[in-house]
Length: 73
Image (cartoon, rainbow, N blue to C red; front, side):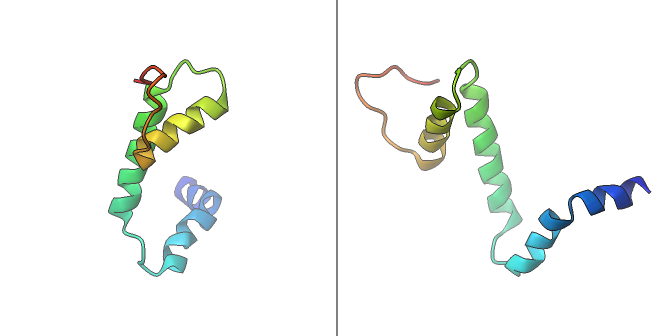
């Protein structure tokens, strides 16, 4: 019963894999998820979502930081 409820709660997310028809490797998705979690851990203590979002863009997109700002991590 517990497994069935879990599958039912996550049905749309599970079906996304079948809709993509294997075009996206789960390894690539897991790597992106790991990098996003790392960026959020490094961004702890920021008080606004906008700053954390910027930290995610820099981490995941390898965007350059302005010279006059401090390092985020």
